[in-house]
Amino acid sequence: MVCAARIRDMGLQKMRENFDYDSEPDIVEAANVFLGKHCELLPKLVDDENEIARAPEALRCLGRDYKPKNRVIPHVYVVPRG
Image 1 (cartoon, helix red, strand yellow):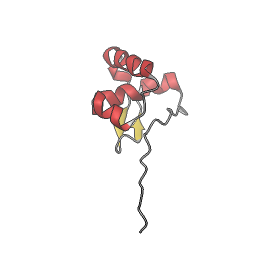
Image 2 (cartoon, one colour):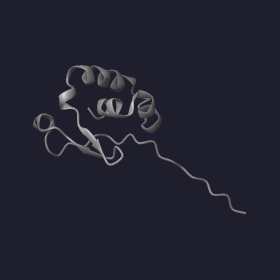
Image 3 (spheres, helix red, strand yellow):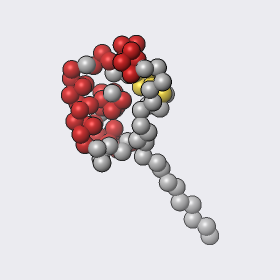
Image 4 (cartoon, one colour):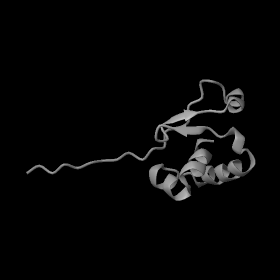
C-alpha cells in the first residue's frame, strides 16, 4: 500500500528514483492495481514520505503495529582528503 501511495503522490518515475523497488517489480505492478481499485485505503504520506498516516479502514486489516519494509535508497557521500 505504501508503494501505491508513493506512486499516487510522487509519480512512478520519482518513486523509482528515491526507493528501491527494482528487485521487486511485482510489488510495483500490484501497487498499480491496488491504486486503481482501493485508492481510499492508501495511506497519506506526510513529512517527506517518511511519516505515514494510515486510513482507519486499512488499520483494521493491517493491525496498529504494522511497519512497511524500508526501501529508501541510501545516499553515500565521499569527502576527498587532501
